[in-house]
Amino acid sequence: MTLLAADRVTRTVLPNGLTVLIRPSPGSGSVVLHGYVKTGALFDGARPGLARFTASTLVHGTARRSALQIAEDLEGRGASLNVAPGLEQVAVTGRALPDDLPVLLGLAAEVVTEPAFPADEVEKVRGRLVTSARVSALDTRYVAERSFRGLAYPDGHPHAQPPDGEEAVLAALSRDDLQAFHARHARPGATLLAIVGDIDAGAVLEQVAKAFGGWPAGTASTLPAIPEPRSLERPARVDVAVPGKSQSDLVLGTPGVRRNDPEYYATMVTNLLLGQLGLMGRIGENVRERQGMAYYAFSDLRAGLLAGPWWVKAGVSPANVERAAEAILHEIRTLQRDGPRVEELADARTFLVGSLAVRLETNQGVAQMLADIELFGLGLDYLERYPAIIAGVHHEDIIRAMRRFPADGYALAVAGPARTA
Image 1 (cartoon, rainbow, N blue to C red):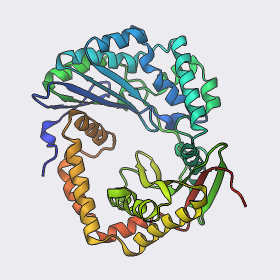
Image 2 (image 1 turned 90 degrees about the vertical axis):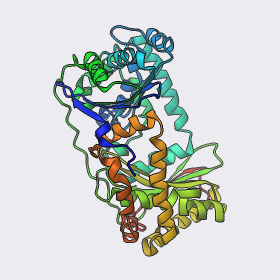
Image 3 (image 1 turned 135 degrees about the horizontal axis):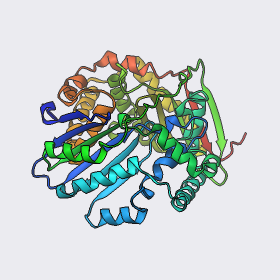
C-alpha cells in the first residue's frame, strides 16, 4: 500500500538554506502550511522559558504590521497563521484559500524573519505565560511530570527543565533578551516549510522564494552540549505535596530513544501495547479497568531529536499510589518476560498502518507528516516503506525494547496531598 508516493513531492533547498516541500492536492480547495524553525527550548540554557517567550511573541507584531493588522489581514481572507513553541523546534502553521497563499506566505515570512517585539505586546505575552506557570504549579499532573524530569535527567539537559519555563525567568526576561535570542538562532538553514493543497508546485516555489528568499543565511546555530540522560541503578523517587488537592498523580518512567534510533520502531510498538492501544493498553486494562484504581492510566513515548521521556502516567486516589505503581511495574515486567500475544501484536500493526492512512486523508495531516519526515531525515520514500517497517517488528523485538525500560532502575514522581504515616 502506498500512503504517499515520493514522486508527488517536490523538495527544494533555497540558496539561503531554507528547505521547501510541496505536494499538490488538486481539488481540495485549500492550502495548508506546516513549518518548523529549530529554535526550541533546547537552546534555553540557564533561562528556562526564553525560547517559549520569544516564539509566543512572534505573531504580536512585525517590522511592517502590528498584531491587530496581522489579525485583520488573516481574518479578512478567512485564513489562519499560528506559532507553537516546543522543546526542539517552533511550529509555524497556516491555512488559506489557494489564491491567498502569497499573502499567507508573506505574513509567515514577516513573523518568522522580522518580528518587532513591541514592548506592550511583550508585556501581554509575559502576563499570559506567568499566569500559566502559576496555574501549572498547582496542577498535580504537571508537578509530577516536572519532578520526574529532575530525577531522570541531569542538570543542563533540556528535558530536565520545565517545558513551559520558570516563572522567575519569564518575569525577568527583557525585550532585548527576546530579540537577541531570535537573532542568534532563527536562520533559514534551520527552517523547513511543507505546503500541501490545491496548488501548482512551480508557482508555489516562486512564491516561497519571493517571501523568504531575502532572509540572509547568517551563521548556523550549533546545538549546545547536552549531557547524557541518567542511568539509574535503583529506583529513584520523589513525593511532592501540593496544597488543597485530593488526587495524586504519578509519573513512572525512564529516558527513551531518539526518533532516528534504530530501536525506535520496536520501542514505539512496545509503548503502544503497554499503554496506548484500545483501553490504553495493558496498563489501562489492569490499573484502570480491572482494578479500578485510576482515573486515567497510560504510557507515552517522547522520541525526537533528543531521547525524551518514556513514562507511564496515572491519576489515582492517594491511598492507591503504591498499589498503582506496583501494578504498572507488574505489566512492564510481564511484557519483558513474555512479550506480546500473537493477536495483540497483529492488532498493533494493523492499528499503526491504518491510523497513519487516516492522518493522511487531510492536507494538514500530509503537511505535518512531510515536515516530520524532513525534520528527522526519514527520506521522502518513508511512507512507502512504513508498512513493511511495522510488519518487521516481531515478538522478540518487543521483549528487547521493553527491557530498555528498567523495572529496577526507574524514576517515580508523585504529586498530591501530603503523605501521612
